Amino acid sequence: MPEGVQCSDRFWEGQILEGSHPAYYAVHHLSVPAYYLQHNLYSRQGWLAVHKLLSEFVFDGLTPENARRKIGRHVDSRNRTFSIVRGEKLLGVEQIEWGLTIADVRLDTAEHYCADVRRWARQVCKDSAALAAASSN
Image (cartoon, rainbow, N blue to C red; front, side):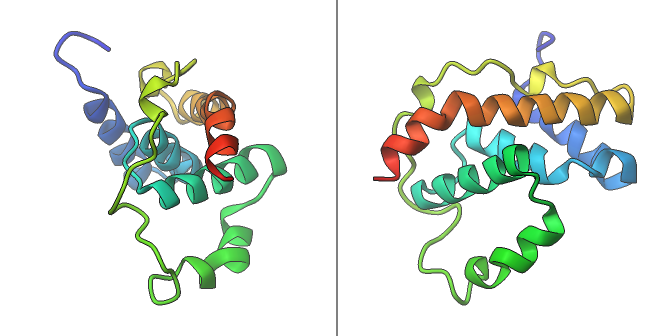
């Protein structure tokens, strides 16, 4: 990152672009989970659930619309038995060596941004797969 710029600054720059330009928003379902997984901002159960969901987006072609139909009822806060963000964090996330981060995502055009976010999300899934598998048991 450039001097004085934090990961969160870069992340929120991307989120602002996503909120103002539909072409950037096309990867919102990838950018938020990738960032939150890397920064361990979910609860332990939330981290594992979101990792699984992001992997389905990246590797299985799950779309946001299909995800809402498939799991919407289960993740609704009235039906969930755990908090997505509050609670014990997953141990070991801080030990992962990330191949790509938000610093690798270009913001200059929607085309670059979307391509980079897709690569980043895929790399997050790969880099954290062993931890997710070991922690799901």
